[in-house]
Length: 563
Image (cartoon, rainbow, N blue to C red; front, top):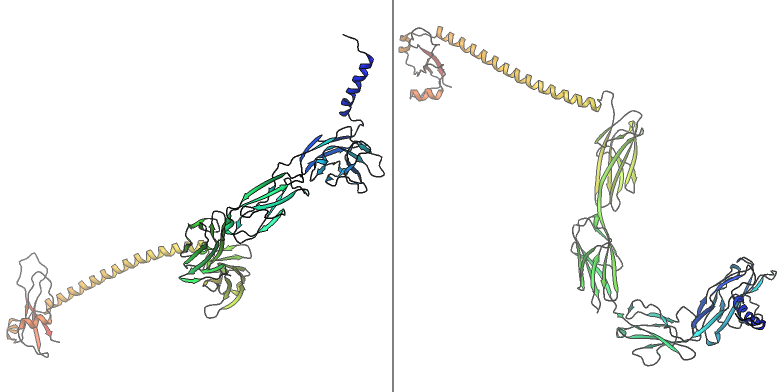
């Protein structure tokens, strides 16, 4: 290798040392983080984030920060929080707070004259010795380029004919650009239409599909622009009318409708618009109940109940706007779901029967509840029918009373709301010592049933015995009669032949004798009988068959007198 001359070595050191020095912190405990180069378009703005530490900390009090141009000690101050300093660039702003180690810089309305290098300097409070310029650590180079970005136009939303609309055009990044000129042009207007960033206009149906253009012009005459298309909607009106049980009722200032339960209601939605539209009826659950494309859409509610209470919405949707109106239906119904609870002061609950027993020194709490729309008025009434006395009244859904044994009586719960009345009676009776318990009552009921069965069987037996005795007595009496007639009833043939009286021979072998009727006698004689005359009839009696030879039956006579 060749020998290096001392003079060339010094030259090399002079070139290398500045390059190495730039990346080295001169003083320990001082550092800064900031971008070394930033580009911004002419007329726009840019924000440069920046943080630093000084004396190994980033927390200070009453400190100052300065952005300056080189050279180190004499360069101009372009941004600071020190109000006593002379600032050369009013469009440079120290946004950060040096007390928190923040040195963020914002440049607005950037121009070509803003190009160049800048560095940050920190100074503690007036009584602090901490002061440092971060010149050697890093400098930030600002470059200003030609304007190419388009302006930003605010959202127009829905544009409806006849309704004022406000729109704003601004540079990108929400920067204040005083050097930029902003103007508006309209496709059906020649030349400049408006020359302010924010404009207000009233669109018409003729503006539909017209264009609005915002132009942004720099001081050097460079222009960028943005164009939007107007989609103008025609005004759409939606009205609702209704019928209840065939009677039309429509009040523009009343959207809360009361309907009695069981009614029929027809809601009619009418839409006025020159654009095509879809009409929809929805309920409070956003459930679609009816839809169509006609100018009128009806919704029919039949046999309405409390479940139909709610808000109904008619919506008209065009290709660019949706409009609608609401109507609230309140279904009224009489008192219902009456419930009575009975509870003793001992905590025991009694079943809500028509009668409840109360012990001595016991207090029962009777609670009556009933719902209704409008809310029911519930009262307790004491006393039998015709002698009732109201003892409590609650303007709500329930009423409550306390009953002691000395107040045992008939209690009636009444609930009404103008649409109907509902009632229920409870008999509170003092429980006697001899009253059976439910278990005893059940056993007694079973015993009474079997006693009834036994009594029924005994009755049948006694009846059968009486009938049997009657038959025996009747047979015995008949037997005596037969014996008497057979002993005393024999007459001579002379007596039979001598009589001139009319008689009839009744002979029925092998049967008991029976008495002939008066008509039989009359028919047999063929003669007219006098009521006072005495008549006779022949009756033949047959004795029980014997083992001996049969004998000729004897003829007996009985006295038959005509009535």
